[in-house]
Length: 400
Image 1 (cartoon, rainbow, N blue to C red):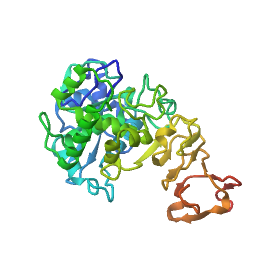
Image 2: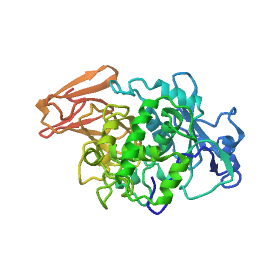
Image 3: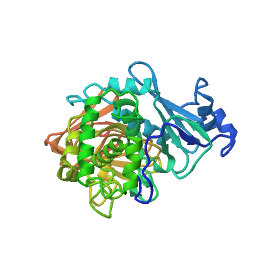
Image 4: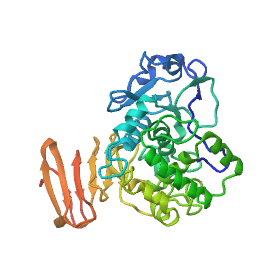
């Protein structure tokens, strides 16, 4: 779902893209934008179709268990951190969820995505432009990819830089992997899960849980067979807290969906909440969030109503500080894995020093275990200089 003033975007099998030589320098198509690329990011493979090589200059992939790739292409203004975050969110959706009804083993979903030719297209600018090159894939735009610790993320800018990463990548997983019943769809791996999604979507639409959608939008989504995809994206966005800081009302997706956080989801859409509860999706985010190198201060993984971004950051588990600025991380209860940067880094805990067990592990990591249940969990720390407890500051290396 998009802003109320725009027709909602859906998964596009043919997406119009900007061509090198028309908008950006032809040199970008020869790899100029990857000279300093992060590990795992390279030039578009020579084996790809010409349209991809003309329109994109960076490439990475997620390899399915069957050995086939799920492609991720990026244009020149997409940063490496944006690209890696998009890859991390895709990997999150495809990470096995032990004990869940449909997510215990997600290899069939990943394999189906690869076999169906799934491709994520990371595009310059915003989604209000039309370009002359046509290739297959799911679009996600530069202005809609937040990076943890960046200004857009910290301020939760819904007007100009709303985070659409989870929505658009979920569309990719849904259409190319899980599968959608009905016309205009590809073979899917989980028809049972899709059946549950469809029933919940039909209930939501019939009972006004998707808001006062214009009749023409409902008609368009029905013709495109995208109602279940748009509904699931609204549920997942609220599940992971992306609308928790929305200031205007208690609804998600710009006020179109009946809930903006987990509490609202359980109260207002129990069928949607049931789909999130040990069915396919994790209760926390499994990817390692790379904090923007420009960030300086304390990045909190614990919810604080005064910090808008923590509606979402509360579900992060693992983070890596990048760059060289001295920064801090406040832990939550998800057994965090925290890696520092080249600056001086502090990890903050909720209790007193005596309530924790601190051990040096192999590989120069520190294990800090909270003795109080359901508070700070078990944390693995690397390249961290200081631990701050409520009653004591411990400089690592001096007493550990």
